[in-house]
Amino acid sequence: EVQLVQSGAEVKKPGESLKISCKGSGYSFTSYWIGWVRQMPGKGLEWMGIIYPGDSDTKYSPSFQGQVTISADKSISTAYLQWSSLKASDTAMYYCARLKIITMVRGYFDSWGQGTLVTVSS
Amino acid sequence: DIQMTQSPSSLSASVGDRVTITCRASQSISSYLNWYQQKPGKAPKLLIYAASSLQSGVPSRFSGSGSGTDFTLTISSLQPEDFAAYYCQQSYSTLWTFGQGTKVEIK
View 1 (tube, rainbow over the protein chains, first blue to last red):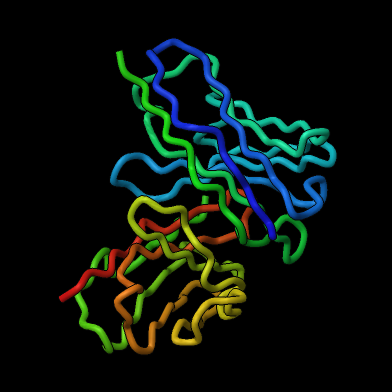
View 2 (view 1 turned 90 degrees about the vertical axis):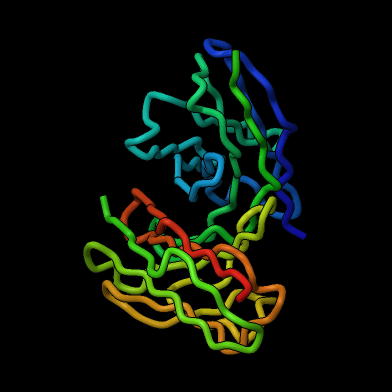
């Protein structure tokens, strides 16, 4: 069974750094892209970026480029999303999801993590 | 960026009703359109991929259609467990975008 298990909720202060994780199991972690999706309180879904753990190829949404860093450690089947300096506006639920490719880099998110709630408040 | 516009933003319906949600792309995306369901406090769940392919395990009352710029998600007979938010998402462009969502509520 494909599973993506995310790290637990975080409460941080503005300016602090943070790295959240997403551990994959039940499939070949290096053969599928992993994406990150933000959902701000009461709002819709926003795609942030994706990473291919096999070679760490990464693509970012322009809205998030330079604001976050996506990485992966294939030795432990884990993808990461990190911030160097959090802002109150980063308060949101963050989901990781596995991308099933149809062709090229076009596909769909077929398995999702349970989400990590990040709260940034002074 | 390709903009995805869903309509309506919300709707009220009764159990047994036929429900249709529309998603329009700002440019042609061929059939690279997916639909997700999200219940409160839960992660999204894939329902339909490539515009009309039903994800394994999803009830057959869900169906998708369309190509180019106009797409539809249909629930043939609404069940109590279908009250949720629904999102379309395009993957034609590598700058994937979601629609703003449609909330299906109980009438």
